[in-house]
Amino acid sequence: MIKSAALLSLIWLAALISTAMPAAASPLSQSFQEAGVEGTLRIERLSDGRRWVHDAERAARRILPASTFKIPHSLFALHVGAVESVDEIVPWDGKHRRIEAWNRPLSLRQAIAVSAVPVYEEMARRIGVERMQAEIDRIGYGNREIGGTIHRFWLEGPLTISADEQVEFLKKLNARSLPYSPAHQEAVIDIIELKRGDNWVLRAKTGWALSADPDVGWLVGWLEAGQEVYVFAINIDIVDRSDLLARQNVVLDALEAITGLQLK
Image 1: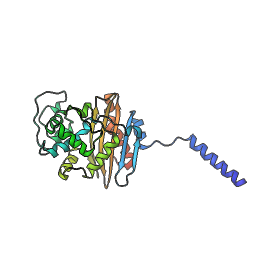
Image 2: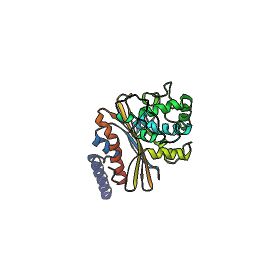
Image 3: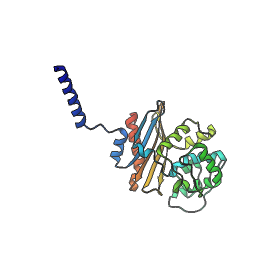
């Protein structure tokens, strides 16, 4: 009876402590709290399939892909011969835009680095509605809908995709298992490199969905860290232009906490 009473006391004390002390925030939740933004982030380690997710409900919700679509778009352009290589120069149309880096001839390598919308609008025109729809269907990208405006559907709709779906697409690209030539997949992987450090490489593409309400900012890609690969997709509400910086900061903070690497 004494032992039973002591055991009950210990159970009661453990329960009291657990309710009095809040659970430690996950690396993902802590990163969002520190940045002061709302959104979702999914990270998956490919070696064992372990996942970290902040706001799983939002991670399953489809949103305009904006310029993250430049990743599959580049594959499509290479596959159908809209350009011969990622280094072929696409002529400038002579129209001045507010982003000065867009106002010159650019290759896909250069265009994806500065997120040059006009170059990818030209790629869309060269690909055409039928071939674009066929390629999106081939890889099962998002809701697969492009509507009737060939050069704006990833920016204004109807194409949408979720963070979960972004990760699944990127896992296939990382594995070079998409239905495209290994050379084309390798070329696209090469041009999305953002930064590298000691024994790690970050490959990713930003996106800013201005037609969403509120605006939504994306960063999708993966971290190669030694023998490990961490695929990720984040989207956040952009309430102020300064929130755009949080896309990368939240991802890098979370990855640093998970991997122990110094990525900034």
